[in-house]
Image 1 (spheres, one colour):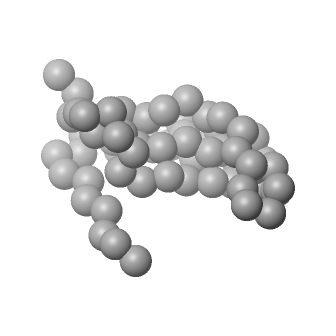
Image 2 (tube, rainbow, N blue to C red):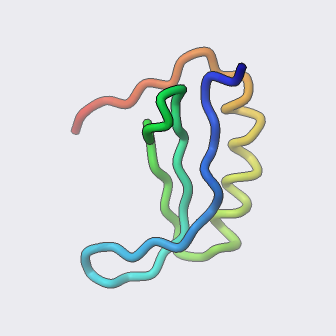
Length: 66
């Protein structure tokens, strides 16, 4: 069983109505641990592809409150 997974790249509108693209890393309870946002879909797709191998091997991904 995979511990972590990536969501698909999707469009995101922020509070200022800016269109961005991004994805999340989710844990076993299907809640986002961390989100990534990019200005273009191409940037988001490239980052998503790079993160696939990293997330597949990760034993622990921890987010910290701001």
